Image 1 (cartoon, one colour):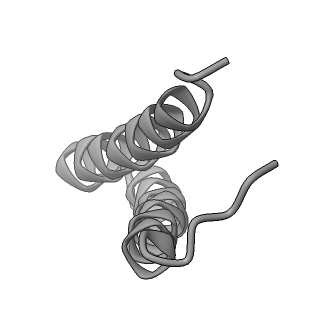
Image 2: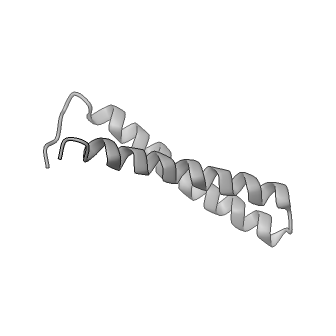
Length: 66
């Protein structure tokens, strides 16, 4: 696996943002279900989806050259 020093900070920030979206989405979704709040559950599910999408795009971009 090749590592490019010039792109590392950008990829690290995107990966960190994806993980933050996943964690916050999970917490907000759980809170929405616990409080029976549909709006919180939907917002949490959207944040989870964004986090998964960001990680999938990162993997696809990394494996494009193979």
